[in-house]
Image 1: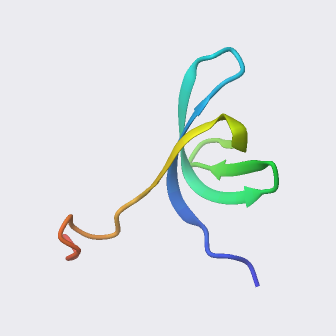
Image 2: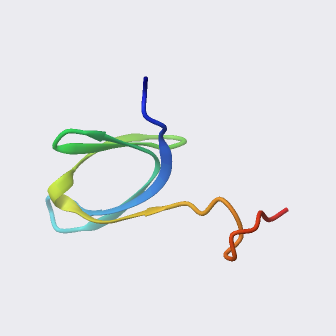
Length: 66
């Protein structure tokens, strides 16, 4: 059974010191995380990740928005 993938925003530092952001479906791949977006796919080293945030599924008070 495959784990449910969630949409995440990943902020990470590239090898040249530049900070970058990728958004997409997030999965753990050992020493890396995989982020599959609408137009790209990326493998990011876990030790380069600055932050990971998830997408809210409703309004800020927990209710669904129309």
